[in-house]
Amino acid sequence: MKAGFLITAALALTVAVLPGQTYDTLIRHGRVVDGSGNPAFYADLGLLNGRIAFIGNHPPGTAKSEIDATGLVIAPGFIDVHTHADDIADMPRGENFVRMGVTTIVVGNCGSSRLDVAKFFAEIEKGNVALNVATLVGQNSVREKAMGGSFDRPPTEPEMSKMKELVAQAMKDGTVGLSTGLIYLPGTFSKTDEIIELAKAASTYDGIYTSHMRHEDERIYEALDEVFRIAREAHMRAEVSHIKLSGPSCWGQAERVLAYIEKARAEGLDITQDQYAYTASSTGISQLIPDSAREGGHARFLERLADPEQKAKIAAAMKKSLLSKGRKDFSYAVIAYYRHDKSLNGMSIVQAAKAKRGADTLDDQVQTILEIEKNGGASGVFHGMSEDDLKVFMQHPNTMVACDSGVRKFGEGVPHPRGYGDNARVLGRYVRELKVLRLQDAIRKMTSLPANTFHFRERGELREGYWADIVLFDSEKVTDTATYEEPHHYPEGIPYVLVNGTLVINKGQDTGAKAGQALRGQAALRIAPN
Ligand SMILES: [Zn+2]
Image 1 (cartoon, rainbow, N blue to C red):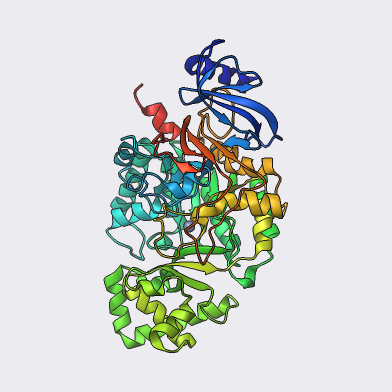
Image 2 (tube, protein in one colour; image 1 turned 90 degrees about the horizontal axis):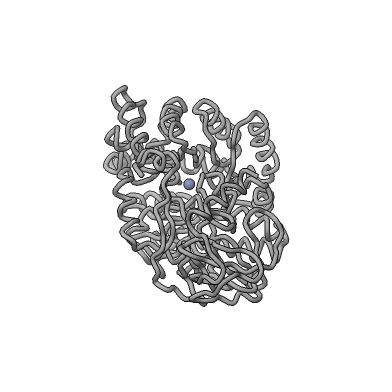
């Protein structure tokens, strides 16, 4: 009843429609999957002033424009809580996102974010971004700023207060929480206590804690323990980012991992997770090199490489780490984008070693990786998961769909296809073809689950009074067409996407419309003068 009252109130305030009054847009004859997890029903939608003004049969009025949704599913626009589109203000179309039905993104993940959040939102609000944008504040960025580099030591007291101040300011400016990326420099050098202090600064302002955990292999349980401890001691909800089991030696444990999370939830902790629908991950090739070799920055890394004894130690550690995960070589690691030598883009490390050194022994592979890092590094695609685990994670009711991609520059490099295809792949491969999920459950994972978890009010469901973020797709045809070899392809079967009531994709074409909003966290909304 309470929810119903709120909706009626919102409707009365913003989008009251009298009989005979004109809507901006009517969407007719579609099959509505409303995002709640409930099954589909047939209805028309009337949109006015960026919101949904009517859902039902025989809308009382006419419209300036109509969309015939015959044969299409009408769903809430997809909300992707795990992206790396921090440069969205520079590439404001975000076409790889909107073309797969994503109308809201969260940036600032894996510990890396802008710190000038007020300025960031001002850029978004210049009115040129195609989709809605929210951001987290990243612990790596905070630590780097406060400590002046990527150092393997605890912060001093003044550095610690500086970090807390940076997090609190970002939260007041509208971030939705704190993210960590604990395999990356310098976050990887932080002890749990340090993170808890920062998490408290975020939880004061209703923030969520999201984490790219320290381990995604057989040590995942200790990494989860750390997430649970942070959630418990900072009194906040927590999200496990891009949940996965990486490396053949830990495959087959997805059910055990979920049971481990369920135990924490039974204790009262609010733990959720997100996932992309691919068995390869993507990050820097630098992740194949031990942190200790890269500690302190690039100049120090080069110094260590120049010392034959240290270089030999680094190489030995890389081989040991590879073999310990049940692998024989680096063929699972593929170069996505290497600015220094683009001819290697799309090649595995084994192929790159052969191309550059004329030989592909394990030593040559290691030398190739070190050479790449020496020349500024490269992004990579890592084939490391089992699809059976992926399906088990996907079926859990608290797993949301999130692509972990940045804004793609069309045609550049050979990046992970997830940035072009993730949502379409879930709807095509995992709903229609493999029947891993029911359609309404898949939609819920892309809409109301992320909206409720990240506290985006009046989004994530199709309801009267809610913002009109809407995607129309053909459930029989929707397909991801981006592959590992040829990733620069948009999905098929998603003809219409609306952001805040405005068409950004119309009959499959980008309209150039700029209807995105800056989505500030609840704390900032309460602080802001009205
Ligand atoms: Zn990550």
